[in-house]
Structures are given as C-alpha cells and as structure tokens.
Length: 444
View (cartoon, rainbow, N blue to C red):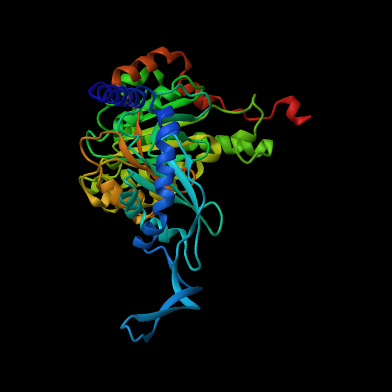
C-alpha cells in the first residue's frame, strides 16, 4: 500500500511539473489545449449569475409551474399543488461560445430589449473582476450584438523589439492592450498630438518613429524648441532642423510655400492630392516632428505677440491643408492646455491622432483626450510612473486603447540616422523639386 501511494504521489508530482514546464515554456499551446477549455466552461456556467450581478438581465413573463400551498390535512401536513401560471423571470443575454485569442478570449452576446453597448462598457470592470481577468473590452460590429474581449494578463508588461517597417509612412511603434500592434499610419491619420510628462516615454516614441521612418523615402523635419538637444543627434537623417522660435517661423514659412507649390502641381494634373499624381511627378512626403510644442506659444512679453501669432497661424495652416500635399505633423509636448491660447485649441482640432502618456496635470489629459470616452481620461490619469511608454491612444477604428511603445534607445535612433543619412534629401532640393509644368506625356 505505501508503495502504491508513493507511485501515485510520484505521478502527480511529475504531472504537475510537466504542466508547469508546459505553461512556462510554451504558454500559447498550453492556453489553447488546457487553459481555454476550462475557462470557457467556467464563463459559460457562471454567465447567468454574472449578468444578474452586473444588472444586465431583464424581467420577462414566462409560463412556469409554481408551488402554491393548499389545504391542511388532518395529519397536520400542508398539501401543496403545482400551478401553471405566468411569472417574472430574470432573463440573461444570449451568449455564443467563447473563442480563444492570443491573450485571452472573446465572446459575442445578443443584447436584450433596450440595451446598448454602453450598458456593457459601463460594467466592463465588474465583468473583469467577476471572471478574474485583467481587463474586458466592449465593442459592437452590428446592431443587437456586443463583443466582449477579455485579456487574462496585461500584455504591456513586456514588449518586444521594434519590427521593421515595410509600408510607406507606416510604423509599428508598440503593442496595444489587446495584444495587437500599435501602428502609426500617417496616410490614414495624418496629424498627431503626443502628450507626456518627463520620463513618461514621449521621447522614446519619437525615437521609434525616427527608426521606422529612416529607411523610407520621406523627408524628416525637426522642430526642437529645447535648444536642439533632442533632435541634433539625428541631424544626419533630417532634411531641416529648427532650434529657435525664429528658425521655426522661417521653416514654417517654407512649408507653407511648399504647400502652395504642391497645390499648383495637383491643380495642373487634375489631382486632389499628391497620391493621385503619376509617380514621376509625386513629391517626397514630409514628416514634421515638433518637440516642446508649448514653447511655440509661450509669450514672455507683448513684443513676442506678433511672432507667436504668425507662427501659430502657419502651423495651423500646415495642419489644415498639409495632408493632401504630403506634409504630416507629429507634435510632442509636456504641457498642452487651452491656457496657451486659441492657436493650440485650433491645432488640436486638426490632429485626429491622440496619444497621452502619464501627465502631471489633468488639463493636458483633457486637452488630449477630452473629446473621447471619459473612461479614457480616467485610464490616462491612472498610468503609473513605473511604466514608461504606456499611453492612451485613439485608434484608427474610433476606439481608445492602452498601449506601450517598444523601447528604442537614443543610441539605436542615432545609429539609424547615420546609417540612412544618404536617404535624407537636402531642404534646398525639397523646395526646388516642384515642377511648374506637366511632362509631355501628361499634356499630350
């Protein structure tokens, strides 16, 4: 008997060690084979109680056999009888079978009468605690359907290296909380605001952009209002760099003039934007990186008022008209608030790309994310200082997500700038590259 007990204990120990090693070294297959079936059964079995606790059920009338008391027999026993009648029953939303994902699972629900996706989004945190998962995201792809996407553990704890960019003006800079890639695509979302306090990961995101755009046939332009200490190391890959407000004003005037020239080219060719031009006529796209945006609007005395107004107007014109003519903005700043003036508010309205790292004041978070879901503001204010690179981003699908950028050191960005320095067109060549008449093949 003791020998058999030892054998059983040995088998259990070996099985436990094997499962632990499987979970440790190849979690994906362990999750699909062992973890997900157990989780799916648990979610399916507890859905009625969870829906009732989260106030997602509805009272409906159903015919039901009910027990009602009858007469008291002579023996003192109460006679009961079953009666078929209509009673109010708590009905839960219909749940399809859960499906596994890389970092958790997803399931589709049929909403009940009078329910909308917001009803489920409001209780997403309750659902996460009920099922013991990291987070639950709510989306809807058709009326009457709600999709719950649960992540078992935070995929932003550790992110991998920056993958190479293969498409023009598109860079994968990190990972979303859903486990998907965080992509900055200037062709889809042309202008961005990137807010964040010191050591929040704001500069790291700019480094990731430089590394991703350096091999591409684009012109990079830097506005470094920190005296040039941020972008000067990347000067070999920059076509132009402005480090003072006066230089920024002159460079913005060049961009406005360049934009006007490209308007004429598109008008001659009958094109609405540069991407409808023939490849031989298409000018080089330009990505403008602005660091310390607030420095363009701060005024020490009234003598700077005219200069600030001129700079603000030129930057706003680039934001309003630049997309069609291949000029894109990526504006970074520690402090972005309405107190900087109406120019910042107008610029914000033109920047549909919103990225908010950890910030020191609620006004900056409100300025960046205020027109999104209020829950995005709460998530932005909850970003811990120990998690640099984590941000709240407005995605291309119209929703907001927590995301984290890949770590890109300054040395890596400097190496990329030097390695691809030959792909940086000079600013004089960019300004002089606009044709003033169509080729013969276009005029024939």
